[in-house]
Image 1 (cartoon, rainbow, N blue to C red):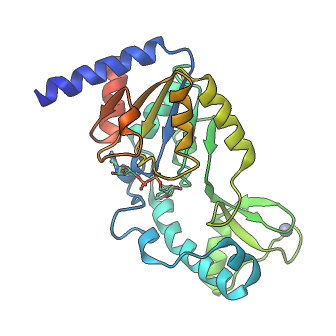
Image 2 (spheres, rainbow, N blue to C red):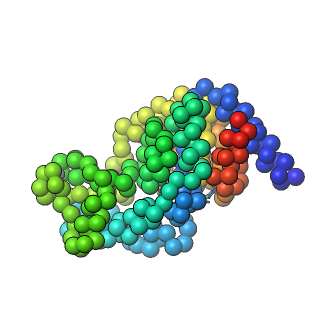
Length: 253
Ligand code: NAD
Ligand code: ZN
């Protein structure tokens, strides 16, 4: 019974996606675990190993900036080694063929863009870039992580000379990227189908977006291997691997 139930669910989601005029995909850390990046709750992930450095500490203290850069250069090893998986690739293909408007993600790993997705709204920023808090210049992250590892000193902004460089991700206490949130709101208000992939849907305000879409009349599909905060609202729950589920929906299109 399990298998036929799941496969009929996949068929139905494929049908909804074929008929949708404005479908949106919302992703969380679960889509990247199959690329070797642990999610928030997995043991061994860098998120569970270290103390949180809050944004105001980062701004005020050179010691906190050093601690932050040490943590980020450790996490960088995971990101640098990761490649997109079939889940990311399927979403890039759906965007290119006009099946979905784009991807709204909580992830900071940049794997959607690497797999070819163009319109990606990064609600929590990206770990692929650094951002100067003083002059707002942005640079690719790699050379700065290398510099930190070689010198054990926090790199300074090459644009303004001594600005504080921070990964372009949203730290606790830091404001969210307004433009991406605004567009994500618009997409969700206009959506007739939202597919949430690999998110526990408990981190707000991000999780409020699929909820908003549902309240505005969209169908809500949740692909996740554990319970989520919005299971009771979902039109379809697919309990399984993100990559396998997306590939199965794609095969049924
Ligand atoms: P989360 O860790 O809260 O939830 C991930 C969910 O995915 C879990 O419910 C888990 O059971 C499920 N999952 C994991 N692997 C799966 C798989 N292969 N197939 C199906 N389900 C799977 O993640 P979240 O909701 O995105 O929130 C965590 C926060 O931490 C986010 O704000 C994000 O910015 C950050 N984060 C990002 C990354 C990344 O960029 N890859 C990784 C970890 C954490
Ligand atoms: Zn600067």
